[in-house]
Length: 174
Image 1 (cartoon, rainbow, N blue to C red):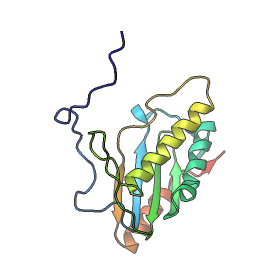
Image 2: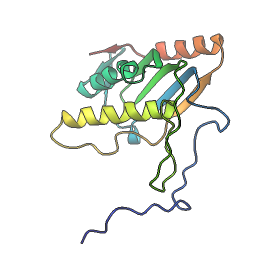
Image 3: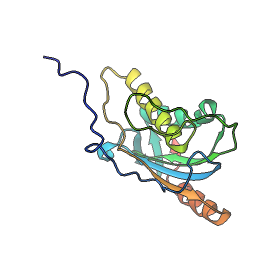
């Protein structure tokens, strides 16, 4: 007995946004992002002898991070690290040609705006899951914890402080 597709009830399926309501996350700027694996499962490797040893999943996560600018030409990557159960990185969105917004027509709320920080993170995370699942004999469901943490980097001092924080993590090998 197939119950059919799940029903979307806007009044019941409201999720609070973690984003700053007054900021346009598609606008140029520097953003520090952190996102965790679901239940902090150690999917990407282990810290041993003062180094982060990436396993095959961690290597895929690193390759996909480095490829973000290939998929989003208006993004520059700065310092980043992949830990056993989370990713930290600084992304810079630069000016890009204006595009008209694309509204959804399926009755669900609009997702992340095309080219926005949310769309970039969503694309990255989906790509990592897809690549990991293609490399396994079983499918991983729920690799990532919902949402992500972001900090809008507003000045050079904050950029240097956050860069130092990321660089103090164990160096990645593997």
